[in-house]
Image (cartoon, rainbow, N blue to C red; front, side, top):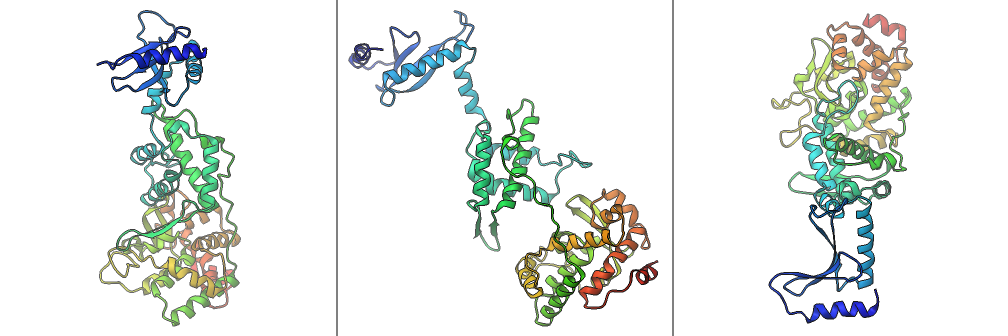
Length: 435
């Protein structure tokens, strides 16, 4: 468009008096290209078209390109040409714009996932609701990491490079926080590479949920295309019996110094049962079956689960005091919940034991490794640790002298002796005592 024609269009618009209704001034060369003048005098470039295939029976659609104060006539005309070219190919820019406006944002998709998508997506429990604690951890990862970084984006706008940037930001600690939010309420969000890997896996599950909807809420899963590590490294750290003795001595020393006995008892039970952290910390007395020497966990990571108890673990549980009628084996000092002070005391324990980097899960891994090393089958080891289906596990716990309970005795006796600072008894002697 020549400068003379542009000047003519603008002068024509400016010369017209304000009207009651908006009106348009069309370009003489490019069909459909115009300026819309509002009653207030606001002027915006527009392009109007009929979706292909064009015809008189198809309503005209108009797409606003931008205000005249922002776009020059040449810029607006180029944009109009590009729009009309897309229309000629069969697209409908106005419909696409409306669809984009109606599309869910990532934060809205997460809300929908919370209501309808938090189920097991693979394995024998597929389709079953996530355990409450797993659901809480999953949603916490999404709300504390994904929402601050990607929450305002439309679902289709998230690309592989956005996922890669999110992973870098989480690994660098940009979403980490530690603060109090009311009485006895503290939120600790840790970043790091491990957290980043977990968040990617969780967000990938959210996009899989979106793709399975009818109609689909996403056209692709950007997490699958992102060049990021989604798999945690295999955990190989476990304690040998010498290190278990170090742990046992540290627990004895801390006990004489007056450290909270609940935290020390929880630590010993982690080592003697191979249970997960909160399976012991949040243990209920109703879940302890002394008659059949097992724990009947109502809500473990894999749902209901039966865990055999070796004699040392049984003895430790039997010696614990009952606290004021609380249903918890280890009730909180204040309030109605269970004791959560092990997070504060654990660093002291591992420092005293000289075992840097050891976590409560290391004790679970130690029991599993000891089981396999002592010749127990994978099925027995899985039953001891609660890896098998809970119905299959329950079969082994029907009798106190069941194979699983005997296996637990054979596996735990060495750990129990080391924990108490006693010499380990031979495997042959152990078998005689439990058979």
